Amino acid sequence: MEPIERTNYVGTTQDSLHMLPAAVNIVCPFCKRNVHFPFTWKVNFNTVSNYTVSSCPGCKGKVRFVYFGDMDEPKKLENGQLFSIPGATARIPIKGMNQNDSLPESLKRAYTSAINVYNTGEWSATATLCRKVLEGIAHTLVPDSKPNENLANRLRALPDKVDFNKPIMTIADAIRKGGNLGAHFDLEREPDQEVTTLMIDLLDYLIEYLFVLPSRIELLHDKIEHLKNSGKE
Ligand SMILES: [Zn+2]
Image (cartoon, rainbow, N blue to C red; front, top):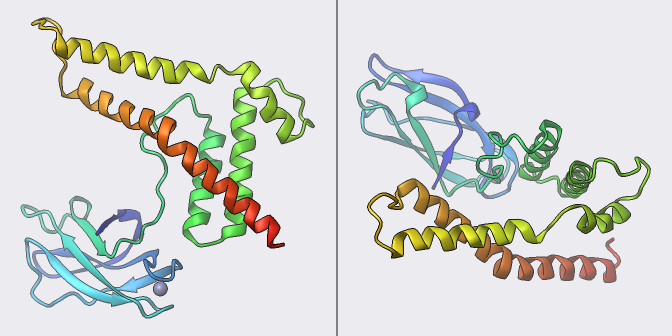
């Protein structure tokens, strides 16, 4: 089950009390194409929830939709939430990216384009855009590199300009200090939900970076080598 962004709703349908989306444009969970799912909701709209089944016009795959409206104001479409089963498994940008000021707007746009193109199933275009985002990252971190310098050389220069150890050491240190707050009784400095949520988040990043990421990098490397060897480069 996956929540569907309201920006994907198309049109509305209503009775005297309720309002529901009439259709959605989303990535089909089966064929991964961006398609239109029209809804035929059950008559007599329910204030708690409504459901319907709609078929992909491309692959005929059946998707179930459930809509939870605002129980107090069922006509407020903006307060409701639509879900699809199965989920469209569309990629979404990294949480908090849009609020991050250190990431340049042009880089955010390039990264969002890569995700949007991925969600439409255009694999070659996605690979090209991933490289463009990488160029953007290299340019952001080493802004003074020569404009004509090739990407491989710019990436090789990165460790001289950026201290890659620092974020990891800072994360580890923050978790250690946060843990000390919990371990030693101090009425004045007790870890709260906000601090512990951040600690869990950072722990996730640390585990991902140290254990999960290396095997995923290895996997990508092997897949690319395999494509090269099979002449599909
Ligand atoms: Zn489909």
